Image (tube, rainbow, N blue to C red; front, side, top):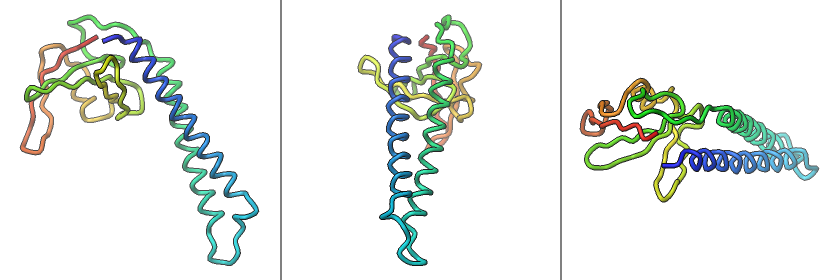
Length: 159
């Protein structure tokens, strides 16, 4: 899998999310300060609700901007096949005949991108899966909780 394509896809996705949240925060802020949002009675909360929404959206936009900066500063290097998994590694897990690709990134765990028809999920070192993968090498296994008990996953370092 091409890591430069992965980098491009993650950055594009974060930039799109940032633009969306920034626009939403601005729209909510405009709605909160609009003359039509003035309270018409002591129980009218339209303006205040819009202000709370704008603050939450602005906070999310800030978090996305920080994640974008973290990915731009990340050293996107190739990992040797026998190297331990660390931040910036692309790993594949296999269990029950199914494979899944994961990128160990600095932020925005759960972000999913598609590269060449294959899905890649971003995980962080703080997540359960991230903690289980950090330091592992190709061919090792990890045990993760599953619905019917622990599930053993074979680890492959893709790059």
